[in-house]
Figure 1 (tube, rainbow, N blue to C red):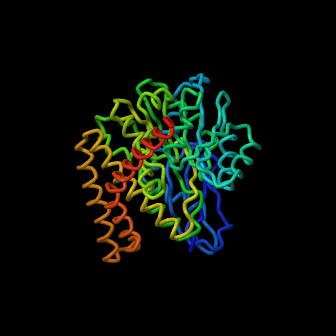
Figure 2 (cartoon, rainbow, N blue to C red):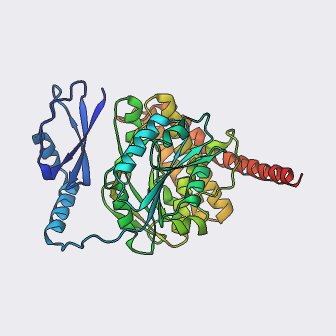
Figure 3 (cartoon, helix red, strand yellow):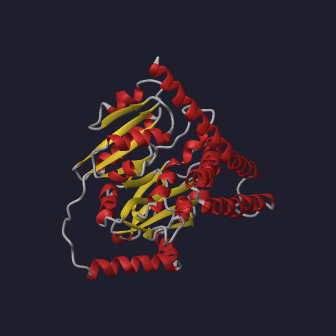
Length: 405
């Protein structure tokens, strides 16, 4: 049975929900005056979820009660700061042949705009002109990147952005109305080089979406604001700090740290190893001595993959090949031996642990076929990275030779 995703602000009071026929559970995002403070998963009864049940769940969750109290106290005793000037900004949205998702994303970003910025859509190796025609209907900039790869799309968007802060969002997210403003407010200190935010599910209608949410849902990073730097988290653990669906960087760092400029091949044979470029950008930011702020108030809703095969590809590419390609890159190019330790620990504590749970049929365990596919992807990661580097060098030599002729 699917899970209904609900959104409720405690400042407006708790209401009963009677429109949940066909759902056996509800995942409720809890807010206080718009600020996300937690989430509870509750069982529905005869298509109904009572407000009293939500209240009981809050009462039994000490962390949510603490965050709620903290927010209420801050609103009561903290003097208002007034409207501080925001830095100029650019939002970059990489996309590839997904006009339906892109349109919804663009509409949400435009609704969140506080003014003083720009929105850039980077059309990555499109099969036709549908994306260009769609973008022409919105007040946004259109850029085309002929070669595939999310790192190329983000690199092009970042290099063409004019804002002091460059926010990145995937084309399958809906950003919260305060997303842009909340992200920009985190850059008040020059030490902050990047900001990431909460990624919450838009819907949980299929088993594949449920599995992905259990694997990488909001509980991974939680509802507490955190400030990371190289003294508190090893740069090789950048994957725990955030991901490309919801992140932002200072524009000058995108250039000076060469973020997203990964030397990999243009073809699709080994291109699966490119899926860790967002983590690599966070790695470089931490390694350069900057802080990365995780702010749950910078919220986006993500439309998880709906079918098993799409889920399998995502998990293999993202937590398998992509992650371990980046561990290999940091070891070989940056001589970061900590990356070896983190990679081995990740393989043991996540992949092998999940395999054991799956084989033993533990409650909530992932399907064995999915776990095995992810493990195969992880093993493939270093080889895919080396092959892609080789393809990249060959591609540059061919281009140089063609230019000479």
